[in-house]
Amino acid sequence: MIDLIDKKILYYLEKDSRMSISKLSKLVGASRELIIYRISKLEEKNIIKSYIARINQSIFCTSGANLVVKLAYIEKKRYNEILNYLKSYGNINWFSDLCGSFDFSISILYRDSQELANIINDINLFLSHDLISHNLSVYISEYKFDRKGILELKEKNHINPRFEVNFKEINKNELDEKDIIILKELAKNSKIKNTELAKKIKMGEDIVRIRIKKLEKRNVILGYTIVINPYSLGFEGYSLYLQIEDMTEQMQVKIKNYLYSNPYIYFCSRVAGKFNLIIGLYTKDRIHFKENLSDIKNFFGKSLKDYEFQLLMEEHKEIFIPDNLFN
Image (cartoon, rainbow, N blue to C red):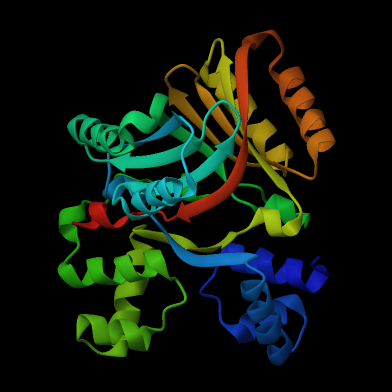
C-alpha cells in the first residue's frame, strides 16, 4: 500500500503532471531525491499508468458516445486480438473490460453522425459473430471527471476548471502543423521534455515553450494529469447506468453538487440512450459499493426509474484526444 507522501505525490501530479520535481518537492515536503525515487516506484507498481495532457475535446470532435458490447465465449487469442484492435482504433479514447451483463465499455469521440455510424460499423464488423449485442449512449454533457477522491485527501475547492472554460472559442483550423505535433505528443506523454518536442517540430526549445504557453492560454490545453490505477490502490471500479425522470436544470444543479460531495464518484456524464446518466464509481469493497449505491438511490428517490451496473475490470486505454481526431 501507499503512504501519505505517495498520496500527496499522486494528488499533485493528478492536478499537474508536468509539474517540476522542485515544485513537487516543496508541496509534498520531501527532498527531490525522495520524490524521484517514490515516483519511480509508483510507476513500477503500475499505480501511475501514464501521463497525459487534458486537451480541449470540443476543438477536435463534435461529441462522444459510450458503447457497451456483449460477446459470446471467445478464446484468449481472439480476446487479445479484440483488445489490440480497440487500443489501436483512432477514435477510441478510453475502454475497459467489464464483468456483468456486458464485456466491454468503450468511449468514442467523433466529428459527425456519419463518422459515428462508420465507427460502430467497423467495430461490429471486427467483432463479427463474436458479438451478441450492444447498447449505445451519446454523451450530452460531462459533470465530473477526476480520481483525486480515491487518494482520500481533502480538497477545499471541488470545482473542476475543465468545465468552466468556453470550449467553443478555438477552431481546429487556427492550429498549424507544429501545434498539432506538440498536442499529439503531449496527449500521449505529458512528461515529454521540451528538447524532444523541439526536435520533432524542428524549432528551438524556446519556441516550443512559447507555443505551449499559447495553447494553454487559449484553452486548447486545459492542463496535465496522470492516469491512476485504482486497482493497485485496493479499489474496485463500477459503471452505473441510471434512468432519471425530470432532468430539469434544477435537477442537474443538484446532481453536480451531489457528485462533488461524494469523493468516490470519479466520473459522471449525462447521455441520450436507454439510460440518461452514467456514473463511474470506485469503492473499497462490495460492502462499500452497496453503501454508495444505496446513497445514490436515496439521493434520486422516486426520480430514479431504472438502473444497471457493471464491474469495471482493467482500463486498457485513456487519452483525451486519440490520433484520428488530430488529422
